[in-house]
Image (cartoon, rainbow, N blue to C red; front, side):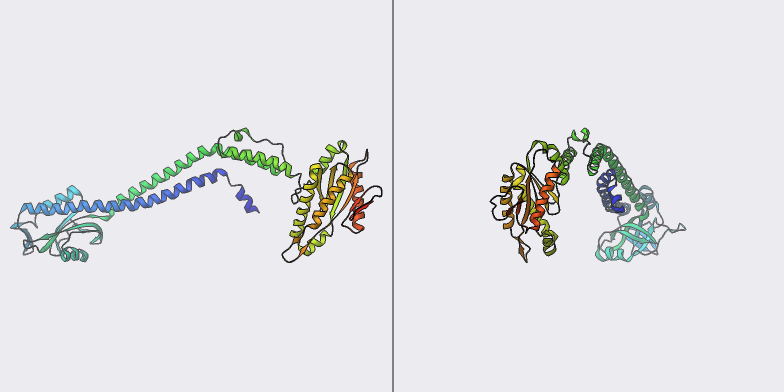
Length: 434
């Protein structure tokens, strides 16, 4: 129970913010993940294009230097007849201009490179990765990789095959950038996207809070109004701020007012049979007793306890509802019908005792004819009635007690009958006089 109360007391503002912000938060997370993926995909593509251009540019520069082919003589690299392995100006200028490392391979060895080890020594005469050899030398194709391992450092790398005059691949040009530096830039971009997403979420929450504040206030008015109804206080009025709104909350306010009216009526009715309850009956009598010459009847369903015991309380409720509906349809237009307690009913009739008896004979006949089916058994019920009429100056309690005495006489005299107060008269079956 305590846990349920805590749930009921959650702020509507919190609920609205949760409904509004959580989807935005999920969208922000999704966009961040997607942007991280797309940024990396875009970065890979841009790196491939840039490094391809540098590697091709390196080869073109040396081709323009000497039209001959690359060749090795006594561990010295030549381009045609020009010795190039001792002159790093072209490679170093490229690295200075682009920030990327470049390498010239002859065979499977680095012959010239801007890549250095921890001591600053150029990594010449070191081998190319096996995967590179397979793609470039084996397939004769240019090759791009996002994970080239060079001396323990991962590189983005692009390789361009170098051919001799016969079309055989004798070497490669390489352009590469350490992956850490690229990932750092990507990280900054992703962090930037996250910061923007957080800002958007907070801004959305703030805007939602501002836009919902009046709505929350209207909901609180409705809540207070319904709270008074729950406590039985029907004197409170719905706030005009709610009723003057142009949205569904105004409808809710009007519905709450209708509920107030309905509840005021509901407290006057027995919840099972929909007949007047004792409280409402006494109010009705106090307002009309002096103005009407009421005939009063007290009625009781015969052997009703046996119905509950033999067929169950649900079936007992069905009997009560059927009997109540019959009495209401027959008599309520000319007076009132109340459930006085259990299976006992009080009837006030604005007319003569004789007319009331005729109505009761008709309605008890219909009740006797009704067959109730439990699925396994069938049964019917009868009623006993005590009927009297108010004499001039009599109080309601006096007349009601006299009707109750007549009812008792009928119950002890065989049941299934209408017992009438008055002189001896010719009485049909099921009708006796008191």
